[in-house]
Image (cartoon, rainbow, N blue to C red; front, side, top):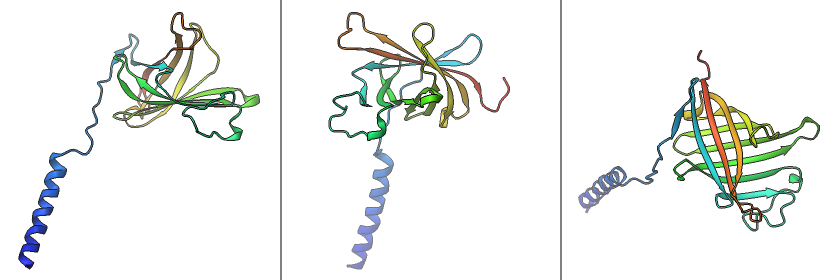
Amino acid sequence: MFKTFLFGLVLGVIAAFAAVYFVPVVDQARENSVITVLPNGGNAESYHINIPMDRVAVGAAEQPVPLPPGIEWPDDFATSSAELYKVRNIHDAVIGVASRVVIDNGDSGNAIEWVMHFPARGSLYVSMRTQVEAGQQRSGAILSGTREFSRLSGEVTEAYVPLEGDDELRRGRIELVSSYRSIVGEES
């Protein structure tokens, strides 16, 4: 009886190791990065967010119905807004998520902060000015990054492009372009 128990135990351990080795728990597909080389050095990547289809959550003081329904935002959230989006590459494949927070700092001015997370690559933290520049876009600096982005510096531009003839539904896309100009800690 004891030999049968040991044989079953050893056989069970071997079967468990074989299952872990041959059957992956998660098979995360990674989209290829679509990177453009800039003429003056550095790289650029373009991302976009389809509005309202890629909007996951929205919180703002003036919003009568929160998204998703039933979510409760804090009472002191009156002077700020937060949004969560799916991020797509130029091939329209979802490659990550991003949060966009608008902060009203009173006398010290407003700020827009993006955190973009790409599961297979890492995260980017960007702080932007709220002033719209030429061509209806904002720009900001990459302040920090993780994994693949940890040693990169540069800037990100944001532009909202409305769909033609769709003023009532407010549909369009947010276009983000990341320009990586240098590697932190190395001379160019």
